[in-house]
Image 1 (tube, rainbow, N blue to C red):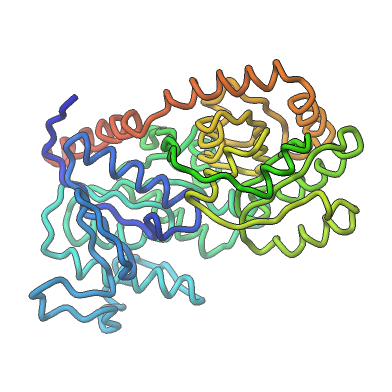
Image 2 (cartoon, one colour):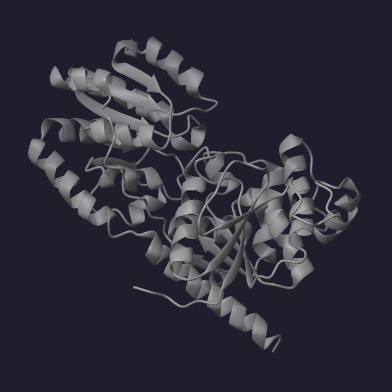
Length: 407
């Protein structure tokens, strides 16, 4: 199917596969590629030069001058006051916020003479740059909310600087794309933003490579009659690895022939390793790292995937697992729970219920087969093309509104 589009999209992002640390980069790439396939022209701005090349997406790097642009000076500090004025009273403290400010400065310089119809900024790291470019260009700004500070804090105490930056950006944006109704509700409730400017566009997932080599050690364990339960995600309070390890201990009280793989990195990893030892289950928990092909290999070998997130805006990994024909158990506190029908759901804090459902899948072959087959059929329905079509609708409404001018 062919598409006709005259949309020129300036997309701002902090990461792009293979240079990424999580689902944000995966979602940014999946959506950008789908938009290009549907006819949009994408110029993607990243903060730093990386060795990346895409046949249909043009990349600009904030710390590298464009060709023949002699006036360009990477991260020119002399422009800080101008940018800060545009950002009004936003205050930046600390290394992270300094990088965000510098990206806003340089992205504005880099795109000053670019031709585009709309600005699409992914995640809070790029919101300030989006605001500055909107003021500079007069073009509409869409913010794509993949997570809020409330998600990252596990619904606890948020970083006040990040919250202030998010709130300013949400109110400055012309439209907001939220990855779930769960996220939209958070923005409305916590940031006092009108529901009318927020549009829900659920994420999707890519199909897996078919040339994946097996994981020899894990295959040997399975050949001995063991089941594999997988956790794949950052080791942070948001993702609930501590609830997973507690459930693992309880499962082993009922079902002995099972190993738990925990794949990922993060500030809680050391704590979880220690917790496994204290619970006396270190010999049954395997800690690994890796994204991309390595993650796909883990999905393929797992008998069950568990996503116990405390606050998950969406959770692409759950769809990735389904695409590998792996049954899933996901927390009710996730955006993915809005679109997944053929997966088991549990409150992240309910260790007893999580345990019961893990054991049920491991012991009940008909249930496991049903979730595997129906989950796969379900997951392939959630495509980036569908997400892109919804984004295009948001683009067109805002672009046409700007063309009409103030009423």
